[in-house]
Length: 349
Image 1: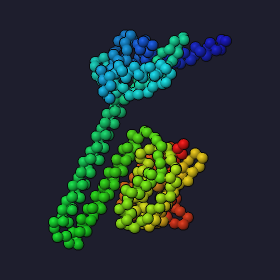
Image 2 (image 1 turned 180 degrees about the vertical axis):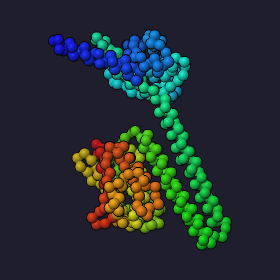
Image 3 (image 1 turned 90 degrees about the vertical axis):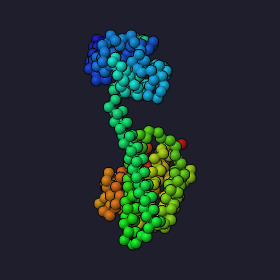
Image 4 (image 1 turned 60 degrees about the horizontal axis):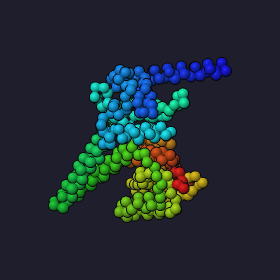
């Protein structure tokens, strides 16, 4: 009995020490949504004294509206009610210091029982710097995606004007073709950058029909496949569905693009098979295959073939996307020649 009492006392001391020294704000909230206690760091975060906090509500330390234009009072009540019902809550919030200065934070709410009474423990972490970086990142992404595309399209228009309105000799034609090739590569890099940016913010997984996704991808390349006389055979099982997301098609797009641009392939075969828990997509072409020296690092950033003019980002991004969906992608040289990719994804019920 004495040992149990000592253990309980030691645990209490540990909790008190954590409470006092934590570098996050920690509040205790009662059933009336009133703060009854807070740790010392809370006073630093909110630029106030402990007495300013005790007896107040979370709404009093929040602006009238949150970042989604929903009233703080309404939004807080929803989170608090869910937490008191036993469902832990984690969300982003705008709080207000005593000075009126607003700041972004991440809040965790968990129900705790003390002496038979329900309380909420709120842990608040400031993320203002993180939100600022995210906003700058989004602005930068829009500039790269929108403005650079506009410049590329304008340049293409000028090239067409030259071809249509001036006499173009062989030498000038070669220069224009080089510009067009460089523009195409620039657009490819912009697309990869945009996809990589989407990967950073992609959170939603859903049921994806694999056959339909592959069909859409093939359709996107229909013109180029025809120009290069490359045949794509879609042997994906029409009933195969996986747990993935909207970016899965970008992986297929990249593999087809590689076969067209780098592999000198005449034929591409895309098929699928299943295990009790996985759907396995096999992508194979009859091109020149991989340099064996590159294979171990094929999915690393910037890795590309000796003759490639690409950015070396395509397969790196593809792996990021597949990892996002908790899948696996690998590559090898096929026994009969050509390249082969194997993608494993969770089977949807």
